[in-house]
Length: 217
Image 1 (spheres, helix red, strand yellow):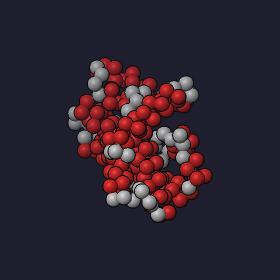
Image 2: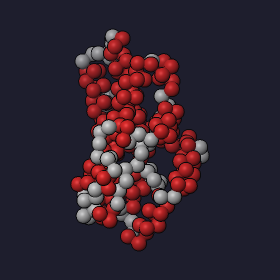
Image 3: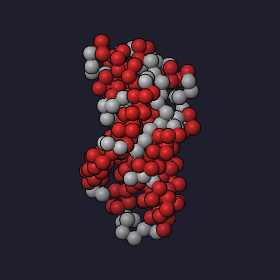
């Protein structure tokens, strides 16, 4: 489910969610960039991607997809794995960094909602609190969705590089060539948004339900 229904029902909550998501996407990509730098690859830094400025990271099509279907992507951070001091560790840590950040944001927002519940604010919220609560719930849900979506082992998503970090080294050149093929990326995304959209949406819905249950929400 995208964000357009929220725009129609509560424009202020929609604006708050958009602001949170802009910085969530920026933090996701910053996580990739700063981890790559720590692991010895300065490529992202040289291209100005070690930044918390959302405009450095946002991708137009990926942002539109978040609005329409509730999951999408930012502009991928460029990395050159041969620069990593430890190839496999570097590839794994850089790839999972953004996912961990999205999970931490989702957990932080869920803890905030749990605190609001414990304080009794969810029982009789004011108009302002209703907006904040709704925005926090939607932003937590989408951050969780982004984390799980990016875990899919399908190039060019982060999950494919996580898997790649465990695969034989002689497979690496073929996978990198596949990821750099724009036709492949377009076909993969189209399949996710058409053929696999319903099962993927059902799976993400189950994950979101279990996640919020962990926090008693």
